[in-house]
Amino acid sequence: MADEGANPEKEAEKKIVHTYPLVKHSDMNEEMRTEAIEMSITACEKYSSNYEQAARVIKETMDKKFGIYWHVVVGEGFGFEVSYETKNILYLFFGGNLAILLWKCS
Image (cartoon, rainbow, N blue to C red; front, side, top):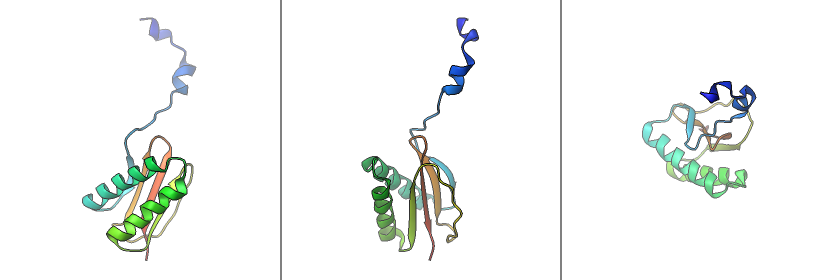
């Protein structure tokens, strides 16, 4: 058991990277949430170096599928406080620290 004396500093340096979408908050119905997550992941993978373009694609697709007035933020290290229509918000993380926030507000 040579690992028992392992350096605790190396253990602290380990970073957890999620390769799956981690939903932090949502009150969408199951069908809408599933579609929104899949579409968000696809857009963020396709435009991994351009968060603005990824957000634009997600917004336009949500507007077409679920009606207008959708808002989208894609990025790292941001906070938020928004007013939204009930049953129309999704906040998730993907690929570690990339956050995606979708909400509808009319």
